[in-house]
Picture: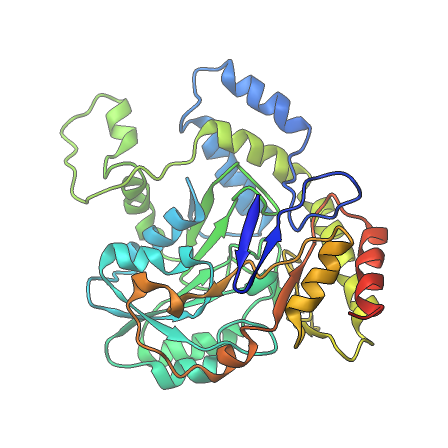
Length: 383
């Protein structure tokens, strides 16, 4: 299997033979029993295990706000945009550097993404540039906690408050992250989490949306299920009208079963990933050719989903790593280059400067400290 990189091809390495892949899913052994129990029950679609997963995940992130589990992080973002009142032709400030899942749901609505430059030290949104791009037509600010390191939420909230617009956090990378001792998920108007296959917690694919306004909960549940009030439907009450165009965005009990097993081991998973992250810090900090992006600070507790470096000769380093059985890649790309967004060339100097230099190194639970040492030795020996 080949992954296209401009100018050359980088193979996706198989597991085994001493290779260190970029990503490997973490599926707890206990998930097998959880799924088997669900398969022999009455519910395999949305049922009681989804309800339980919602409660346990909210408790895990210390969230006291309402929240719902859905079929993907993309589903959760689309619902967030609808619940925030974003409509066709509204402008939304959003990071230029992120998974397209952040911005494609804006196109569902007909809203206009206004791409904001990156902070070159973190690849998070550049709040000073966001301030320059805001206008009377701006209806929301989206921020992405790249790699698991929180954005500057105080500055973002200050800007949002000044213009009276909501903040929507894309925390797909950031389960377990903290900003100034506050858990990501408890800070802004809306926060989305992802349980896609290679995230800290997986449900195979899935997402979670939490929001501060409790009055939105029933509407969120209806939008998740065709606009139907499921509770009333299950009681056989058909006087309940459908008032909103809804979607089929529910999580299933099969997915929730995997997620419930993942929650039980989350603390150990996070601890391992953070130990690998800090080992990278230790081993690469003295290399003059390496710039570590998104480094943890006392105010920011890193969720350690990605470890990203900046190098001026990225392709040469990728080739050397590959020769030693080590995968690396870019993972995410600047969104303004995709034709679907119909964006003319933008003045984004930070993104322009860094786009050919950032590189993601392996960081997952099938690794140990010795694997990080091996990767760092290859890098530190030069290329």
